[in-house]
Image (cartoon, rainbow over the protein chains, first blue to last red):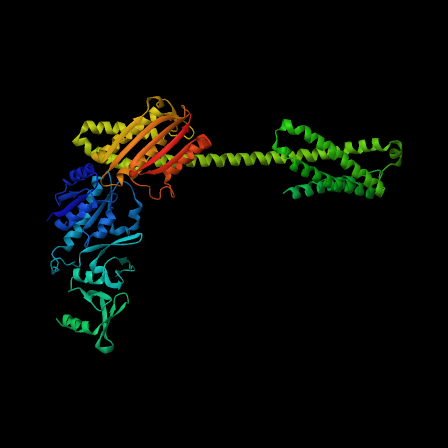
Length: 243
Length: 345
């Protein structure tokens, strides 16, 4: 199955050139192009591409601003004319970027890598409900100067901090501008569970369950975080787990 | 360092004399010779120190040798006489004369002249060593300063060059040209010429040199032609160049840097694009050349934290023309920003 792709660059000729290069790759199906971030946001939400080629420097909103606006991030291949500082914000292994003018051999390597990732995630055991974010979906997280693409399956905990949510994964816990309620609506309820007013936990990350005061439960997650399950949610938790 | 050499020098003089006195059998008592030498060394130390203070205060060594030699010789003579007086006075006080005969034969003036000639030879050696050391140290320092200055200039050149060889621009242009090779081969060929001219212009930027405005404008036209490939209809350029300014001299790549800045803020960062006006004319009965670049947009913080383009323009004008040149960046009421340069003719 071809990888559905959108090209985003403010220069028309740069898009023309990229399209021409991609013609050589039958696995890539270019659905559309966008010349700025707002146009791109519309097209991504409408067409749900699996991959985008993204120029970082664009007039108005930058490529990063665009990613921060997306609920779920497709695979991203950054295209840039010069080694930009912005790129350094990333953990390197999570990042694909190509220098313009693009070297066709490097493009081939990158596409091959993404193809590998795509085939591994194909046919998940159970698809998430329509519109919900699945385990394999990745989100773009930006906290100050640092950026990550994080797979939902790697996130063990969301914690409410005012209007923000703290995202726990690996050794990082950056803040994102999203309320816990908004997150709960988008997350797959079979994987992410609202333990109490302040926390959503990833059920696959639970190591230990202990009884707690007032008939509640205490969950211990991988990494050692301990989260209390409120009494009301304990019933739901037991229901879910007994299946 | 001075005291080390000063004490060491006079100490060596005393030690040397003492050694000579002990090695050779002299016709005079050894103790007397030692005392005399000690007196000469101590007074010599004192007088030569006064000489040094005088030389430092008058900063004689900083002047040209033609101007300072007379005063140095005068100071040398004066120091020798003072040294002579001190030596004689000490001999008188401690009764260190070798031969009463000689003393009785000569009057005071002749005696002083004789002693001064002897002390003078000591002072001459001292002064020669002192001057030699200073000229040597100074020339080394000057060499060091010159190297440092050269380093700073090279650094500036490199920085200017890097700023002009904007890699973002170059690689984007190359990318566009690669697309044009299929779409519009003739335009691609022109673009390569334009890019070559621009690169050549950047590489020829040497500090302190001037080029005719015409040459600068040719480079800017090439630059803008390349940018128009990228921005297409988002960029509008209006040239208002006065004929009589074309032959005038301007610092190379200065106007180009300002135009590049205008493109960045007035067009590149704005989705809707914008326009640029480039103007040149004479002012004040042909005393000043005025260069103006007006671009769409608003000033935001770039006055307080100027980028390299702005600060390098300022420092280049300052270096070339001192206070006679002016550079200003102002917000105009119609949502445009004006860069203004005034160069004296």
